Amino acid sequence: YSLDELTFQVKDSETELMVTLDLKVLFEKVERLLTDKVLKGAVVCSFPALLPATKAVLFKLFKSKELARPKTSPARDIIRLEAEVLTDPETFTPVPIDPEIDIAVLQYTGGTTGTPKGAMLTHANVYLNVEQIVTWAPRLVPGEEKVLAVLPFFHVFAMTVVLNLGVRIAAEQILMPRFTLADALDLITKHRPTLMPGVPTLFNAILNHPNIKSYDLTSLKFCISGGAALPLEIKERFEAVTACALVEGYGLSEASPVVTCNPLDGPVKSGSIGLPLPATIVSLRDLTDPTREVPQGERGEVCVAGPQVMKGYWNRPQETLDQFVGEFVRTGDVGVMDEDGFFFIVDRIKDLIICSGYNVYPRRVEEALYEHATVEEVIVIGISDKYRGEAPKAFVKLKEGEETSKAVLMKHLEAKLSKIEMPADIEFRDKLPRTMIGKLSKKELKAEEIEKSKKKPSS
Image (cartoon, rainbow, N blue to C red; front, side):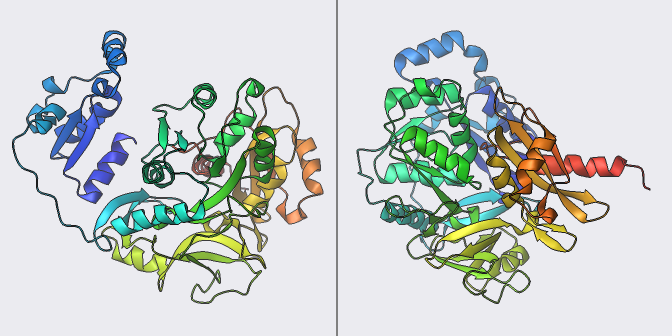
């Protein structure tokens, strides 16, 4: 997080104490919060102390420039070192907890709605979501699994599906403090993980690594994709290359986060986010009247009820009220359910492109572009259009060494999309923007297009 983002979250959550490491990249931000009087105190832990003895010595010798000096900090009077806390003779008294009422986590979420809000997840929310996943995956053997942790634990997906699930099933966790693709592939080959939760861009990057055949990925039993829609093309190619089941799940911060998942054993439907987890109810509601449920097979807003659903937003009673319809939390996603109870996400309500009065769903355009052999990554957004009001625009990153043209891709799309869905433009980029967990991000591209439209002379 940037200093501004941290400042907002600390103030909004009323945080008084922060625990961090003595790495400059972390400590310097916390130090600013202390000196700016945003934060009342901090506990600073030793990073070298976390390492095996030999590595700790080597780190101090060769990477000492990466370490901060909290003992000489201008905020030293409100900093406590880890060693001081551990040797403190004071007796610490456990706080009584009511799991169904007391908050375990304030999970900040902004999504497409702007200002971040703290989703209040109770101890029961967090615990029961892990139990739902354990019930969903009976072939996971406690004490025998290994999880490759490529996702950061501050993200709700990793917190539940990597960290908490890993603890629950006594899995070895192979941690990557900084993700690089080559290191991840080396770790898979060397340490033989059986599980790897990730985002679609991770699986896509693995597929497009130029030396992928030189790595041994056969230890992987299950890979779970979340955080963003998993293009069908990526799923099918990944399973063909690795012989590992890659299943798509679905969730949101407000639900701790997992809501649905494709079966790890049994039928999987291409393009589906799967079935609801145990004790979870998914209801599709009318896009203009969320109190009304739509018939099976029709598009509707995905609304969720279950033991994993949050209490509400921290200090935001009106936004909490707006987010719920009875016991169901509204997700802002548009979905359909087939005759077998499998759900499919069509798009986000916020991302809908209203084109000449018709709904155009960016995901449908993206899926069609992914089917072209040269395309590695795609983002489709709505842009202002003089004649249609709004129109789709595609941003495309090609696979390494591949070439194509706008005309070729447009020709490819003609057989797959209606005229109203055809992009007004296709722009090629060397790279596409990403969020902190690595999923493709539309926000920056939308902001660019808004700025462009402001600079255009009016006709």
